[in-house]
Image 1 (cartoon, each protein chain N blue to C red):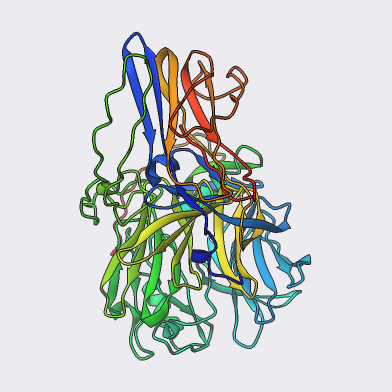
Image 2: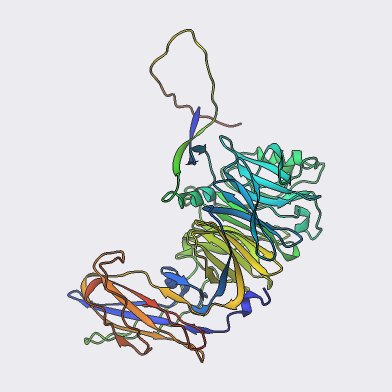
Length: 490
Length: 67
């Protein structure tokens, strides 16, 4: 990318929308004003920060569209060639710097989970073998595979060893996540004196995930200093950062059942009461978003780390959580050129950006896939690989021309007259905001719902024109005059 | 010998005891491809030759404690 992501979004506006519905039970109001509110819907090409501000997100350019349902991981060669591993056909594909896409290696296995460059050339391939656990192999040449008998990780391999975390980039060991129940350690290359130590470490049985520094060559890894004992099931990615910091993404398939949350209860953003609405079924609210929490992407961070979290481990072992979510599971972690943490997640293909101190989370972009499985930087910027479907995209520094956001369905609990819709915010010159509504009597929007309404443009409020119904959802869109901004809500 | 552990059957092949991250991705495929869930992982398999024809089955539940 020619510009860092933090500066590619000059257009911003706050949008606080309010809808009101009246039925026999009285008037009800809905408002949308925070990141958590917006995350309940679907945003396209929009970034949403912790304060609920909507910005045009970075545009996503398709680099490769594969037939594979899953691309598990990617790695960038020194010459800029990108290799991606796929499933369920166990292939390694190559994307050259000029965008040409081709098959590099076709294994006999089902899934190529992890790729890492080996010292002296070649590539390590981690895969799920048929009728076997995770295994590793090394691809020295296209047609040559040296299968290792030792098991290997699913996590993305890093072409640098643990020593790189301390600033001493040294070949010979890979810093890799070992998901599962046996913890996480360093998996050195064959012949490395630390290999046995890593094996010792892997034999540890612990149903919770741990991150540990390896011992020195003459030490056993099991005696390494424990850095982090999370209450999640699996560490899905590790990323060394500047100054010896290590970022670890962890996830859980289900909430931890036997351990107390590690995140202290955090106050919800303060909100003043919603003003009273007149009997004429008109209403408008101004929402003051109070001090946001430092952790985004979570509907209720006070309950713990939810489905996933990203830990920041300092060189002295002190760690904190910089990101957590009750809904999204982290698949990979990367750093952008400003040093902000990017978190690739599933199951809605979201990428979060965490920056600042205390850290604040922004929904950076949503990819058109269920999972963003890996992120790698090359000379042209950030490349992401996805699963369901398996594609490769490049995040452009150029903002998308338009963006939209569709709300979740609002339930009036009986057939209701939908009153007014309003929004409040700042739209930069050249920007445009349009709101739309549709209503229906099935809980999920389908063909029985009304068509989208004509656009509402007045922020002070307009009468909803969609027909009486129990359910309502809203959307925004608006290619702005100068292809600037747009958003939605209700 | 089997244990209760989540996995998936992909293209007719059993992948047992998969981590949550992998299961989440494979779950996304189930609607459109040959991926189905697997609830057990095989810990070991043995063939015991006999001179008799054997019928019937019995399942023994063992509690294993790792030292």
